[in-house]
Image (cartoon, rainbow, N blue to C red; front, top):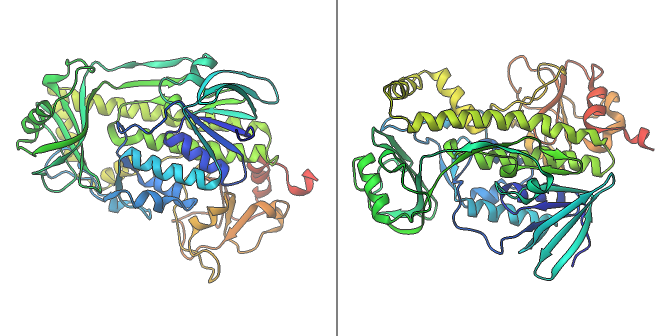
Length: 491
């Protein structure tokens, strides 16, 4: 067995693999354990949204996902002429990437293992104990039981998280009564355009094409809501629902898998107990409306990853990890609220709901309303609370070309080192000199946007840590807060 790592990640889904890659790529020894021995084809997520692609791009990992996906610049709204215009977005990735979760996991696993993370399938956590210095984890795997001592444990082990249960953290929420249908199959008569959805009195059917020619088919059939979720779904049953809702026979055949399912909305009371943390579905789960589950989990990983790295490297105090829950908890809570409203909007057949659906479709013709909805769905509107650190703190920074003729040609390439980036100068200003060994600088060839300050300090996850008209106006304080003591102070 390899020696005990600094961080043990429990769960080899998208969240755990993204976190492992983020840690291992920058020198943190990391093991990923998963009680499964193989990847399940029954994947819930079928899209990767622009903000998730941006985060992967910052580390040079987006291409590994893009090659397995199909770009959908105009995802369907739910009627024949209603589509979302991702071309309105200020991003390098103006599309929703249609991709099976299994392919996304393959790309993330490749990145994690290439970075040096060790994956241990068929290994289960059976207990853990922690003290002020570390965590002892009881594991059972192919070679029998053993105990590993690590600095931190992150539970990314899904809705039935063993880590969360061992910690005794409440997972509040509810199950929906409605039984839905989903599967991956070929279509002999797909409607046009390829990405298609329709909402009628009978229900909703949505089709998402994958690169290999198969389609993800998701159906909400009001006449079959009461069918038990454990009752096998047949091809004939799925075809009948699709035909009734879509008004045409799309010729579903050769299914890879079919399933009924019931969704739930649940949120952990806490994301951290001492040196053990939760991320992804172990911390929050919701219905798949809008495809936000995978996005939220990967964003958890990027938020937590650089903070764990900073603390383990001795650059930042332990309290930096407190900001993980403070920032991510309200994001997940708002996502649960919105997806719950979306589900009720999609499934209700009341006169009020039908009227609201028509009004919502009409409002999407208004360009500012349309843009706002697309920004939220894509993840680009996410902003962390600034807590009195200025109006710009917590905002996402979009990619921009760099003015320097040498070195990286665009901003996001400066994040490949995993550190902070100071925009507005090609040289490290005196105020930031004590942190020069952990800071990159760059001058943009075009402004971020109107009224943005000249100098912007950007965190490793692409959000503003500080912005101001001059480097001596709070830059050092921001670096000290987010990046810990300077090199000189540490010595």
